[in-house]
Image (cartoon, rainbow, N blue to C red; front, top):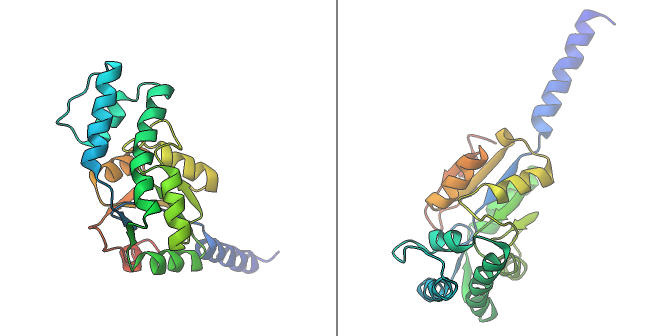
Length: 210
């Protein structure tokens, strides 16, 4: 085959790969895609009561996320902590006491229309996320909640699981959230992370990577 033809074919193949590459966009849930009206102070109180009952030592001045991770030393305690979360979250979903931000669905749709995958990785329970996804008709391809893995954020387990599911490399995976647990999980997983204020998600956020 002539050299010029080989070069032309290589150019076409490289161009095709760059246009068709699959990227995975992972989002936090509460305060990133939606707002779930849960009294987290009550959740924290109940988790601390459980910690005291089983003799688990933790600092009550810490954030609920830290306390929950501290006392979830094994499958049994982790399951009970997840149950407490789910109990309070389900009250909000059953009452319809949640808000999907106006820009959420258009942003997710825009990413999927470009041929990319969208997913949620949240410290809410998976059941709660799926209820809001269904009722709010959020166009997402996968969901991971705190009870989907043993170690919730800021550990990288949810993100690692999603990258494995969609076979996307770290350089083609992006995490978006609103707090340092999201930032921490993104860093731990080795992926680029966007931190935004609640309700400000927009497709323009990803201009630099699309």
